[in-house]
Length: 353
Image (cartoon, rainbow, N blue to C red; front, side):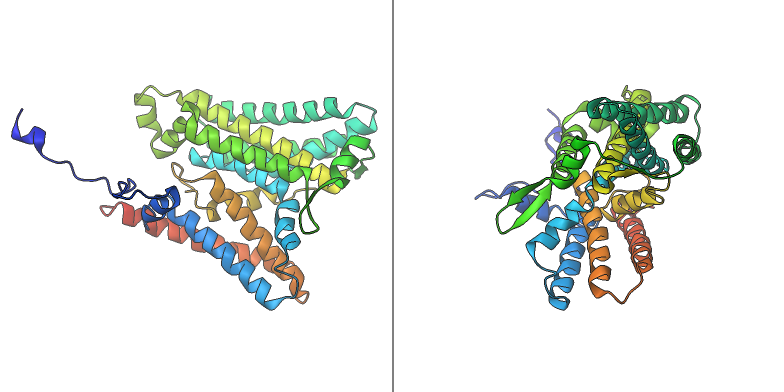
């Protein structure tokens, strides 16, 4: 054994600190590992921002701090949570999906038109999900096999999906199917005279499944590796092509599912539904701490990003004197701030850049 073999290695600054003599709880270890150069920093900032916004609303407006108002952030944005989860997968690979909002609208139109034609609800739901998966596969295949930019491919997918909406139906189609009406109107009663809709539980189940896939499977590790450095991931023998196509299939399928949840929320299919919703999903993902360049981020952060957007909208609604467009202005400012924060933290994490 040489002297160099016994030399202690320098600790990895990004690694969590070792447990102390008395041991630490997981949240303590996570907090101690959260520095301005870590992947958890932006998530922590988003969480603090959410608490500050909700606390400000509670102090300023009567009943804003009631439990049901907090739960309504999930009730009103369950579809956006699912959409943001799918977008997180794509952005983690360094891609983008501009078609997701149009796929939401297409899903509402397909579901409403099939139900109006007398199709059973389970069959209509299956067709909607299959359509979203197919569109995602086509875009993913074009991105990988044809080496096209995701921005251009998904922009074309957005025009295709939105155009198909108008081909199927221009006017709004009301939904009177008993199952869809039940999903829209039935709630799960909670203590304190509060409630949640079934759409919220579906969205949370999707969130939990996404966390498991990204952090406990080979597919998830490959997603992060592609976003970090696609060439290195290929040299390591990872299934780069399959994974890149797979994330667009996931995004397309979850966009279709978000469309179904939006259908439960609106009880109609309309070609002009969800205009700009893909931008809300991207904003939620970035505000939640996922790097636009890929390779770093958490699905839980995307959930926090959605809740931040929902809280801003609730604040403006409670004020009553502000135009709803202030929501877009505030989100735009926040998005710019978080992109700048991401840039500064990544530079600090890599001092040589």
